Length: 117
Length: 107
Image (cartoon, rainbow over all chains, first blue to last red; front, side):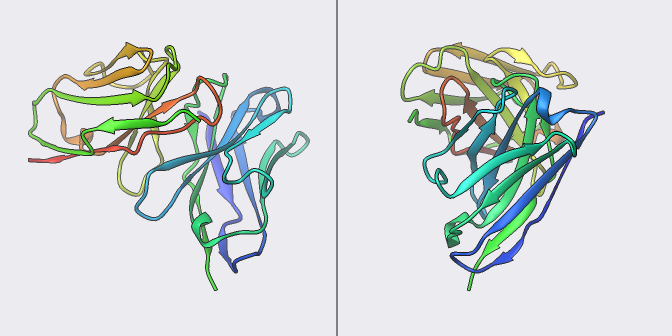
């Protein structure tokens, strides 16, 4: 069974930084495709970024230049480095993974990020 | 960016009802269309991928259809576990946007 576990969420002031982690079990980050998806309070799902098996990445326009997705092969861990955080970045951050770019069937339970002064 | 819309935004239905949810893309996404279910307080769950393929473990009462810009999720006979919010997502081109969601609640 594949499980994904996110961590690193918390309260941060506007303009601050935070790094989220996602550790899968039964799934290898570097061999597959992984994304981060955000859900604002009471809102829908917002796709943020994908890292491809080859190591390249794409981003949503709203986070490009502020967020960076990366992975550590030795730790089998996915990261999302977030900087210049804004109030509208608040929400639950989910990591998701799959064997293709086209659909991700493994999801974590999410970690809550609150950006507030 | 490709914009995704869904209709209706919410619907009320009874157990055993046939439910259909529509998803529209602002330009063709070919068959790169997925459907997710999300129950309150839970992570999204992939139901249908590539327009028509049922994810493993998903009941056969769920089905997907469509192509290009128009897609449909159908629940053939609504069950208690199906009261939830449903999202479509295109993965034809980045950013892989989601629709705004359709909430199915009890009539």
